[in-house]
Image (cartoon, rainbow, N blue to C red):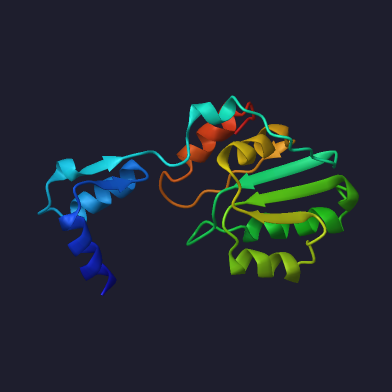
Length: 168
């Protein structure tokens, strides 16, 4: 039913906006009978003006890691969280000296894994924040974490991290 509804809406729409070129091309392939000029791309999340404004974000621990984005499909926090657990158990970084911020939609798998691995004291799953504030977390963090799945979905995140003055 979703595909039927999507095709009907896409056919009736004056324009179809995609968040990246991959999604745009997928729509064009999927609905090849629809005029290709109806499909436009507005690249997700990147607005240079967001880098001009600074917020009042203050990070309290000596070592901070920020991840901005969502986890779904093959893009998951599991490997990072398991690695973090091991680093903390081996006392390579003292728990009281590290804080991780996950900014984006709260997903059940990541929340459950944080609890299961007993990482609630070092992981802050913050949900959505205004874009300029999320970028401020990246700028003020010791490390910006980039986790990507298959495809080019991480390009925008990599550009944002680089624009914030962090190495990718």
